[in-house]
Image 1 (cartoon, rainbow, N blue to C red):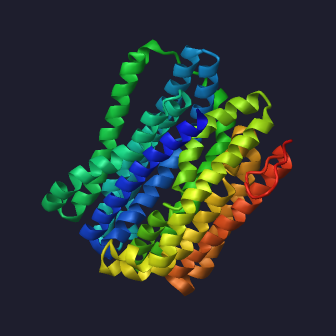
Image 2 (image 1 turned 90 degrees about the horizontal axis):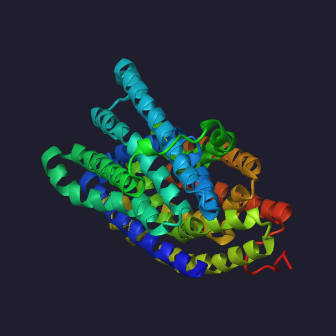
Image 3 (image 1 turned 135 degrees about the horizontal axis):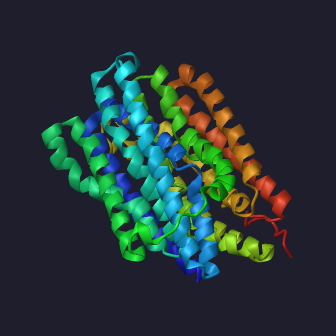
Length: 425
């Protein structure tokens, strides 16, 4: 049953990744390398901000929903979701207002390009939907509705973006690209609200879950999320904005999204097995957890390896699909793909630490990785530009996953690497 769920999750992940890949191709071809740099810089900024506004509640929603669902405590499931969505909504709206006020005061001093400024002004509106539909998708996964959760999280936005991008770009030029992303995001948000009303019957019928209880766990995960999904994925683009041309930022933003295809199966598997891990840790069934983790690792490595080989041999050709300006990013793509393969090779090590209650351990490793990445970027990007950014990302990915694998082995006595012997007998 779990293997079937994992394959279903991977199928949906493939569809979502394929749609996002197509959307990125269209964005790159419409905007070109320089304007793509503006787009990816703004997207990275709002992504990091939306991670903060989620308050670390995504994994908490998934974990608590799965546990309360297993214990047939339906009202608690709904109450956790209500608190876990309403509070971040208020935080997101407050952040948007504060950012616009700051831009009104200092915008001209921050942005040297009018095109850059317009991209950022439009993309800021995406903070709210990015926050809420990602939280709601985690809640759905915790409730066992993996398919809908993954469709909301990964497939709907690029699908709607592809539908909107051509007509909007014809009428509003480059601004139409940014608008297509924002309008698609709010459409996904509306779909989430409709689904909530259908499932629950409205907000007023559900009590609030004490936020303090959620915050006690989520505050540790918030630091992990900001560094892991924010700094580790987006800091290089933000740092590049100070030292390299917008063309290089656009090429790097495109390359890193292509490289992530190497490890997309890991994300799909994590989505499928995280609730299962939570339930098994509650029963202290480490033997079964290790068995599942190793089986999933075989699947992940089996799918990731061919993708890596294709990128190694055809990196320049793949980048040229986005436009002639992007073809010089082939070397950076290969380096980034090697770093992503390290994620795939070690398996669900970070999820194992989080679902086993070792959030603080995960936080320390993530903080170290984030600091190391920033230092590496500051040292390498001014001297080596695009390649320096790629090297920084991959070195940190390899090192952090090695550390996490060691800690899972030491603390949980679980070995996720299928080519090494099991630790649970």
